[in-house]
Image (cartoon, rainbow, N blue to C red):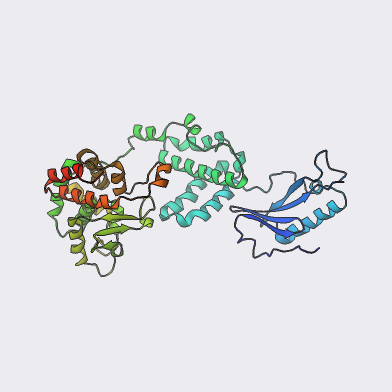
Length: 421
């Protein structure tokens, strides 16, 4: 037959989503990581086996998943199906499986596919390892061999209950991962129904709120922050250690309202001293968006000081003693010497946010842009693309002046009456 055997075995693994004709009614279908064979035909107009209204109607007959069914096997089955049609037989009767869903992947198979497809985007090695480990320990024994469409709410509740009260954080993450895998499977299989691992309006009716459990067990921690009025005193104590790298890094974090991890991992290629801008690339920010940070005078002075003392073995701005990553412990040691009981995150970011809200007239949008927070309003975010950079230049200048105890009242008044909004 002309026009058949169009596909090659080497093509099959590289096709994107879609259907690809091999000829002779045989098609190769790709949906996500699922690949399968389909035989398409129309019920012959004079078929003795057609039911009323079926004549001329298109039919799809599944021939199995690839690579379990190879290209050669699929062609052989398609040849038999064409012979049945030519001899007035319904090919579906010959190839009707005992279990219509026999070739559908299990939850465990979908999980492996999802992890393989997405692990490249998980920057944290620990995070990449936790996905397969936690699913293997908590999910697979109960639902691993089930097809996603067969998993019920009770199945998910059963596997979570033993650890929900004792390992609440782990159990909550397992639930989220199960929900993600089932969502992934539902998209591929075209299933349109409620995900049995969904929390809101589903498992929240069967399991206690994990935040309440953590709070009851004394495990809920917040980023303790000092009152914004006390941050200048902390800065003064840090300035008393002008050559201690960890103290300089903490000062820089407070002056820029940046996360400690962003500062400690910062490299010189991200800095433009002439323009007084530090640009954190998207692969190092929490929301995965590049963040240009305006630098006030004191922040520039710190970078100038560090530039004159670059470590020979690293490009890090604030390196550890041996050139490695400066530890979080070193940062907290400096902070707790200045004020016990607070966190670096709270001091650099929460106190800054409170200061903006209570002592200035800068808008919430400008403050959130300074913290590089993602706009939770997706519709607004789609239209509001500005990063308010010029206003943030002014804001960080006023913040730096406040932290230095210079003209605090004037600086705050400038923010209230100037062009900021």
